[in-house]
Image (cartoon, rainbow, N blue to C red; front, top):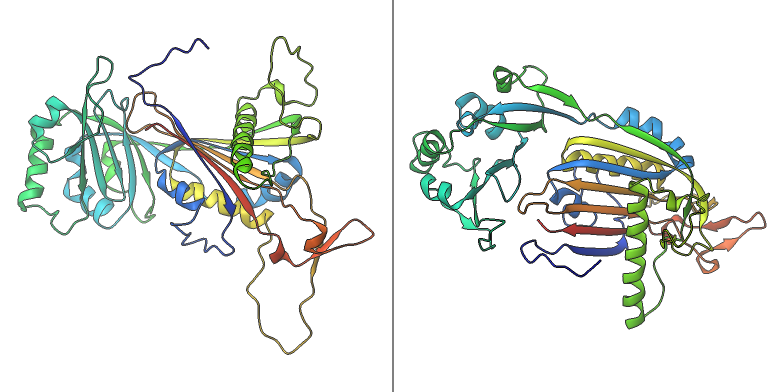
Length: 399
């Protein structure tokens, strides 16, 4: 409010993107280079996932989420870094398996460790880094009174050279047994669980948890038009920036369960100046908010997105050559509430009080008379391929 700046804390940047969703997605191998899947898969450590969806659409997907979506299981276990290199754990989880691990501690303040895709990442202070004798790189931040300079050590434990007896491997073993010896509490998630045996972590007495879904049903909310501006040229950039800011702020108010976005809100503008974007054309809609909390890997979030997408979005199948008549066109009514938003908050991995979150909004379909023919019943008769599914992605980052 008063313009005070904290030069020691990195600025939070917002990256926004709008574009079409891929026309075909293989659920077992989602595209890693295409948005929004590239953003989802790039955030491995997440603690809160929220899904905002109209109540009528939730009635369609609720059974599918319960039957098809896997449970988000994770554990809490106390281990040392040396335990990761023990023969049974090393071969079972790192060489032949795939686990996700995150240690306790405040990023940028304490010594923190993480394990993802076989790569162990150590965030160390200068004294510990020099005593350990491991190769690393500085994080790029200079030491200050509030935050000391840090070094990052990344070790790919899946390399062929990572075996007992090798010089580089024994160097890591020495550092873990003589310098980094303190037991720490880990969040542990087995991405490829084997049901035949409990695994090497059983001797560490893990505490198992399941991220249960919390369902919130609220009264009618004012839902603004969610379509991006159609202006061209330089005016489009300013209009798009305003559209992104308004949409992201509105979704943030939904997450906070603010009464300012309710259709029945009559607060005095002297007390609150917030107003729903384009409130004159906003539609009162009953919404459902689903929330999961725990260690939620990117693979599980991708499954949640694809499950919702497969039920609510009709993706046309590839054309098949036949000798019969041409395929019949699809006739359907375009529901103005055919949208949903996925909001994800991740653990900060670099700076204290850092921000690491993103929101993906599946935009409602938009069509004009040029896309097909309007019947007397008010339905639009068209080919499904004329209505591409589009999304809006907003990502905040100050890691």
